[in-house]
Image (cartoon, rainbow over all chains, first blue to last red; front, top):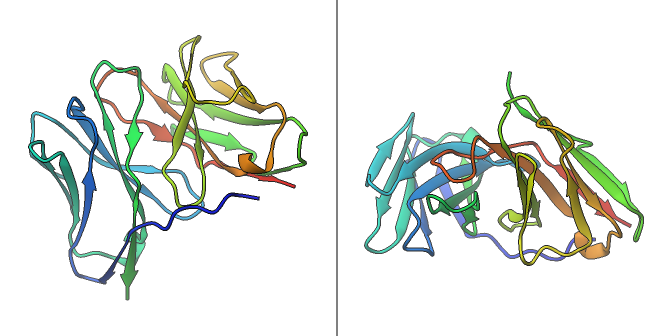
Length: 113
Length: 114
């Protein structure tokens, strides 16, 4: 069978509260970052992306913040809903590299009704 | 709707018995990727095709092979599955490998090895 996996960091929030999921990326040359949401038994789903020439980008109920100085990325979800419960991965990429997204470890978001 | 399709969604095979997983896309993307994802871990890239150009990751075991007969289809062949190969296998596509564009993922195939 499958090997035992690592325990994911877990963030538990109350429905309606804001969520902040953090990610430390590894490569200072990375200039493109993506947040993916993965629900149980499904493939990762694109949420939002940001290029390194920006430090903030907003979508519908989501905001991504990028701090290149400390190589830190965060995803903020406003008014968190039960449907937001999933594992969230950040991914980094360097422009010109042959397609390799480097995924972070993932954070499990659990929303309490 | 344009999408990435994987078949089957669940695959059971026996130890050492070859298995093939299928991926198709209607996005007309140039690049197709195969990832392995084990429980509570991030997806791990096995290889990708940029058009017909195959790019293998350095640490991908020889047991894993891939074929891309045309733009729409890509296959993952596991020649002799071991228990450690039980995982979710994800196919993804993107327009080009180098630019600022995201990868679109399929729903995955869950492989069980008995």
